[in-house]
Length: 243
Image (cartoon, rainbow, N blue to C red):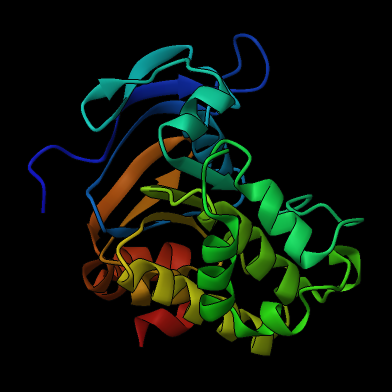
């Protein structure tokens, strides 16, 4: 593991309205190849943090480093050019385009890339997408659209993938499929920051995790440490976690 974190967030304050910060001094580190889970109650700032890292929000204070480079306040296209891809919870595919066309759009900042080779790699990772390569994205199931959104991001060969609530509104079967794909992406070496309401499942597969509350990082540890922490279980994992 590299001594320099791939991503470092230090004392970041950010929000959507002037003088109303959702993030209240968040700190977070993520190393090369790590899968880090980010959990917490609704309104804690999880998605806000992902959007801030992706350049969709500008921090009012604090710093964000990527591979030791200060990227605080860079625009989203500049963040993408540094191999960071953000997959939002909704509106994450081009519904009128086919699966294959969506993947090609994902490589827009790599004009010299071998698209056929990249698409073949994505189809190997997501066989279900290969079966539907000529199907319009708007006709896919919710789980298939999430897989396509991740595949589209992976066309850029990112060093860091920001996943914002990938299991939201999916059936249990599709949730299982999506998490299995996330696990495979992580095992292939892509670092992942996983923002997730399904806290138990996220921590079970995470190398490390952070718990946000009211815009602050309240707990930090390995996935197993957070799962076995009685306070985390009581407050964020439900009553079943305490047994």
